[in-house]
Image 1 (cartoon, rainbow, N blue to C red):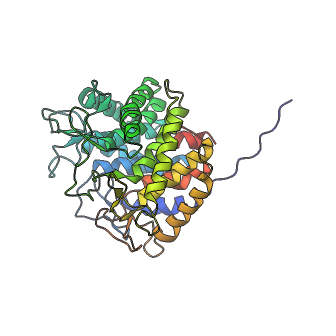
Image 2 (cartoon, rainbow, N blue to C red):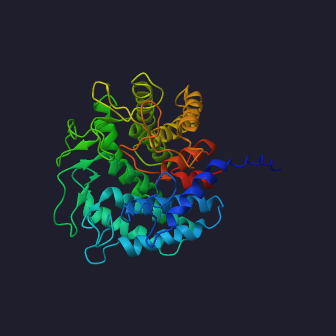
Image 3 (spheres, helix red, strand yellow):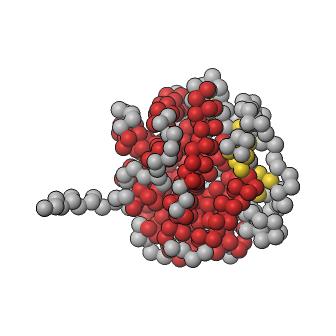
Length: 401
């Protein structure tokens, strides 16, 4: 005799629908997906971007899995653009912008990781050509970017991969961890989980742990932390000086997802995830005496950039959900409710749609770091993960319901 399973609670997709509807405007361009401004119109001052196209392809793939109309076709559109507009058939690798635009010679691990995430997710949905794009991204990452001596990826190269940037970054490697988990599932290659563990070992178990979880983000070519990197321009959008609060939360979630995958030698990950989470919560929330998470702190915990970024609170919500599901933080449920209320009350734009991507310390819409509303990626996680079970990535969480 079998026991009938209780019916699953339906997902609350009202906010997801709001986000997806706004994001669809990004398709109103000739190539890939455009950069949306605050009103949801494509901003022509931004060139076509492999990063935006990859993030939107991932987002529309997830939306398609959830049953949203037209999103499978949008995911197909993204894969076609990644394969045609951004892949360099002569030198290999994916350009940050198409040939003919300023900056088209740049090849970065950060961009390539998002291509891999998008293509792997689309591949799992059966999108045509997605498997090949994922394979090309993997080949590029491991044949061009992988530093076997350190167990992490190099940051960027020029067009023909003859010159490497003398910089290594945690940001690119963090997103590589997420992408490798998605690729492992899509392509059936569990060894990619081991590579994700190697990266996490270097960045978290070595450097973040030895820094009392005030994680360094920037490294020299030999893998040594550079603590004063960008001290002269601390509000850089992708390489800010000091401790980036949102990345502590994001790594916390990713470690638990990687540990859930069954990767070997991962016993340290839950404790490290909890330490990152508790540190980010303790030092980041209201660090300047005002509600919200500051963007960055110095190494003594003093606020440096006090702008409030939507992606930071979104990652805090996702991390709190992971903590709560894993039973790793007694306050996680209350934290999640508090930060979700902050996201809704402060960032949701009831006039122009979607959510503001940046606020000043006083809570006013700002654009000194983030321009417009081009990114559905972080918020999509925050809207869905609290409603989903554990999993190694957002797609697996949805399919595990």
